Length: 253
Length: 290
Image (cartoon, rainbow over all chains, first blue to last red; front, side):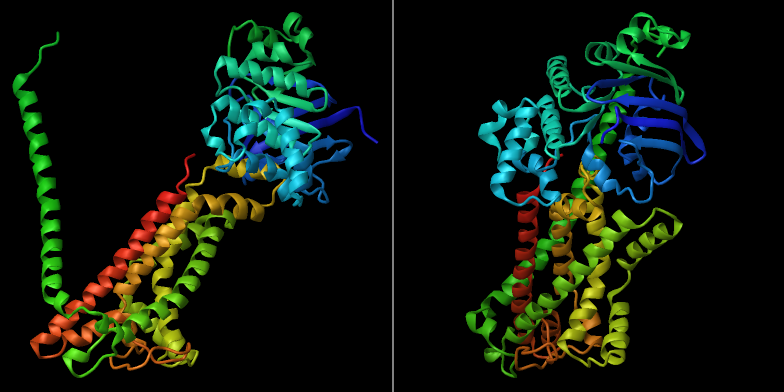
């Protein structure tokens, strides 16, 4: 049984120590669509994203209140193991962060930590994931080379392949193209649109054009509040809130 | 003010630049000179006494028959115990401090004190070893007591070196691992340790090579003897190590024993150089870019 919405966020608040970073967030993330989160620096969009796989808890001073349901289960419940949540909710980071290992070992890392040992199974997963991340043809002849030898854009696609290898349900992307050149960015954007067929994608981006190009839904955040959340077309052509309009027309931010 | 350049001011700066360069060259020259003198003295005195027999013989009352075999093997056996004990304990400690301990005042207090321990005179560790291992744990004046004392001596250095190596692993790749559902231990075992191994091993080898050379004060206290005519055959054997053997030769009145001691120093230096070479080799071989 799966709910229509992958995530339902209900009255969610978050504090770093005494500083509140997120205020009363209510949001439902639809399945197998691309949801973009936009907003100026420091508005809390990355914080919100990192909360969805509970990576935010690696910062010890964080406190939260409210509910975030992933497929109807509150992710903050005691019985929810974060390790299990993170196998369903994968993440791609801002800066490409491959491991200092071979391309093959990078992609096989996830399956290995989850207990897959058979070489032929791993081979299959690695190929499938690299194909899924549209980088198989570029690296198939040098799977044993160190991933650091690749360009930034290729490294980021390796990171996406690494994420696909654990067969997640949702992929969180934290400004995945902000460290890349325009051509690499375009490739990643095409890839994201392709991935939508099989995965729910939530992408945080600085780049409003990017959000407009690739997403189905867009959320606009400002100062820790979710100002507006609706269809991307709606947000960019006919925003309801004055602040959204000011932001997308470039009056601030 | 337009680009009016003050020539004399520039000249002053350039001269000062030259003076500082001269001071630094002088400093390194003095250090090199001291090293060269030491090496020349040792080599000119000791080379003549260095032979296969010298490596194979036990200490003897006659110069022709004296050898460093007991000390050499004692040092080797001691390292066989000290290295694993101090590396396992040291790396575990560093992992706890860097990865698990919550960063609060108490943790910082411990970290500062570990660093302080690295600067404590070795004789203090010798007294600790005497109390703890020789008497309290009733090991007596044995190889194991000496090796454990040495482990205590090098432990802080290994902890500090390992901490630095672990800290230099970028946060981003830890996050990547954690975000895939890896546990902390999996992340440490598969990502952090492989990436920090060069730093850890380099630090450990440098610490251990210091220990091999600098064993005299603590080991005299915990009972390494100079007149040992066997090599250790168990953890509970009597033992000697190279520095103590060398020291005992230098203390003899006849001048020729000084030359025997010099030969012993050459052997010790050769071992130290080998260990440092291994450290450099490991660092170059496993060095990874981020």
